[in-house]
Length: 178
Image (cartoon, rainbow, N blue to C red; front, side):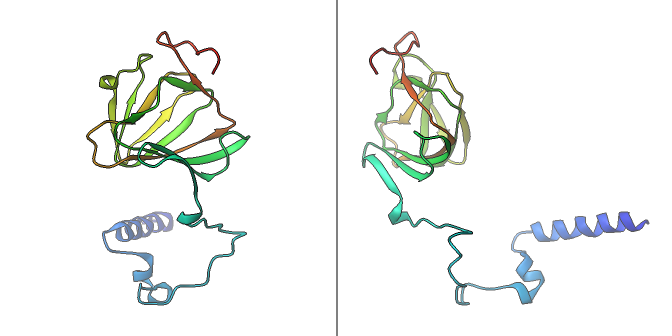
């Protein structure tokens, strides 16, 4: 067996061993490990790893209806942004489109989505926690959470700003005056 083949074999075995349930790098080298009973390390340098605490995340909207919470960036300004949307049961947007792609990850709950130009909650489709979706630019959709859900639909949206939201009529044409 060549040295290259041995290296591949050893690397493969190590990868399998480290991916096994309950096995971590710290467990394979006790000098690197720490447990929950060990004290925490120092706070990371904020110029390297900025941390925003939950209490400092700014949210707009109405608890019990719909909220938007800015994680980073600003959807109305140039650059990357990330927001959390919270849709409480019984609340939906109206048919609209965005002028930029937006990437969604459903964190918890069930997000109900429709691509119909006509607002009818019976046309919504369930998108469950753990699912990734894309709001494709210039395509009509609308979303929210159906009445009867037990918890809000919570999703993270990431995109490039500035992004505009354009409301549409039942023919999918932009509404005037909005």
